[in-house]
Structures are given as C-alpha cells and as structure tokens.
Image (tube, rainbow, N blue to C red; front, side):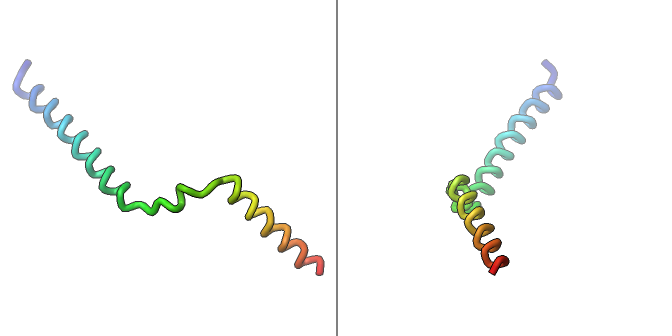
Length: 59
C-alpha cells in the first residue's frame, strides 16, 4: 500500500474520532429535562388547555 493511502486512512480515522469527541462534548451541554417529558402527559395537558380556552370563549 502506498504512503498516500496510509496517510489518507489515518486522516479519516482521526477525523472520525475527533468528530465523535466533539459530538459528545456538545451533547453533554444539552438540557435533558426536555427529553424526560412524557409525550402522553404533554398531549393531555395540551388538550385540557384547549378545552379550558373553548369554555372561556363560551362564557
């Protein structure tokens, strides 16, 4: 294998490793409370708010 092919493979591997580390650093700074919300509970709250708004309009 030629030296250029070897250098290219090494550069690609280093690029993948670096990008994965950068992704981990970025995801560590994310706020996790948005991911812990139950979608069913969120939909129920949204429905209740809509029903209250409709009741207020009727009054």
